[in-house]
Image 1 (cartoon, rainbow, N blue to C red):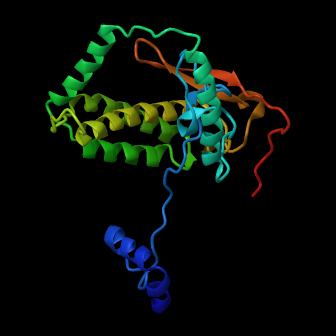
Image 2 (cartoon, rainbow, N blue to C red; image 1 turned 180 degrees about the horizontal axis):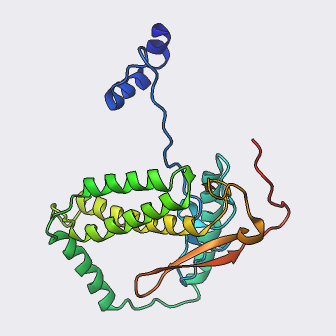
Image 3 (cartoon, rainbow, N blue to C red; image 1 turned 60 degrees about the vertical axis):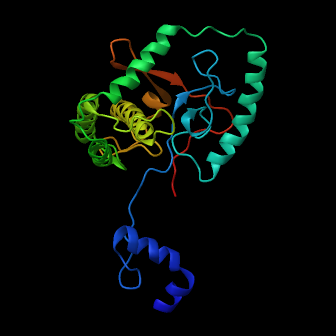
Length: 257
């Protein structure tokens, strides 16, 4: 009741009032699903090495493939601690055996031009609006329950947003601690990841772990007991290939709880 909430949950009550306009003394706090963890990521081996020589990936950004299609609670911290140590030790060995590579001035110039383009954009598209549309499209089409028609609609919308993002403008022209630039770059990365997620989800015609399709409700080990590998070619198009899953002691089983 009122006394218990005021005694035990005053901060929770304050957050509910401030962000949702809901007083939990009077009515229930709304509960909604949200993105918590990203299964999959940059393709990496058990040492954290990626297909790009010298580049390592560990933690939530990586797919070292210890979590399967549905990570168990608490394992993300364990993941980054264990593989952070392993990758760090391997990286020390790697750098001791190679010389420093000269970074071409053309690559630096390409990145400089990309940043300058954001500063000089026409501003006809607004970051907050595109980000909201991206969130809505992914929630509707590639959320908890998935089916092909809605996922294709989401993919089409993501690609539309990607085109419109060419007209974004960074208004803060500071060269250091520029949060406007940071948020814009993060958004552009989010668009790339969203396109990859939608594209690969459409191609995986089964349900497995956190990927649940109402049009393919059963797991299909015969055709899809494998990793989805998505790459972007030089012409900008996405392509998908498959990588075997390494199974050692424990065989895949249906989750029944």
